[in-house]
Image (cartoon, rainbow, N blue to C red; front, side, top):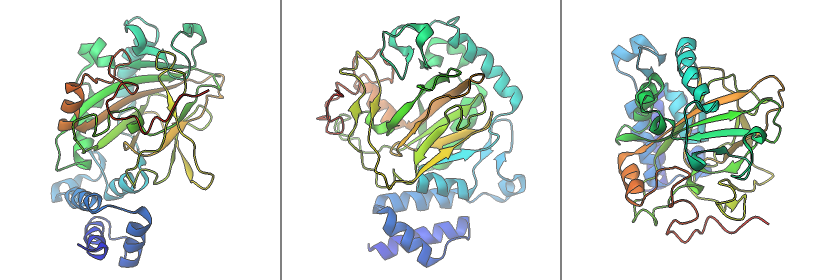
Length: 343
């Protein structure tokens, strides 16, 4: 099919959902974004499915029941176009309060987490605990199973399925993060999540990368305490940029980083407590340090991928644990996007 036909398909879906785009805007959008035919059809299908039923329309968008959060067509459009969007008031303050109790037990090490799954994401693994800037806990529900299927998991599962209605979305991993007060070096380097994950080559040709990652603000997330920031639209081409390890080996540090072009548009994603940012697997993102002396920034991360991807990851021994023997430095994918070690 021609680009025009795909553009018209996209226009038809956007118009049904939002009634905001005309044909010229749509054609410009598709051309600038270099959208592939498969991507156009996926967005079109998603937006068509996102048009709410009469029952849902009566309830509106946002949190409509104890376990449901209905996305607006504009939110879905922003996710696919920009790579990141903030969803307001996903959880109530009381629900965050309950999650916070368990969260803080991980931070205080009352709930033990073994090995590298409890570390500082910004520093070498052997950094003493009192010198940490970003406290990172991987796979909390693995180490505290009674937390599984909590309200956050229930709501995010419902949202993930709306973004990918033709797929069966499954929880891939969870993670807790805390930027300690006054830690200006609590910086997440610019990266794409796919830089850390096995490529289709490593997954025996599994070329579906569909992902949505949720970041719940347990504290108000602002520019001052290091909120998420991202390069607008940087994931639309579905291309993986060259990443460089922050340490000489993964035994030194887990983090990867990339360089930005001066012309790229960086947007902040502040997020009030109880609200959530969602982003895709290719958008370039990171976050700054915490300049607040009296405020931490706690974030609860949940990622969903198609069931087939999760199964393919597990089949090669990749679970997202930092204790895994299979990780970004061992994937059998030629590591063309991890171009070398940082001096």
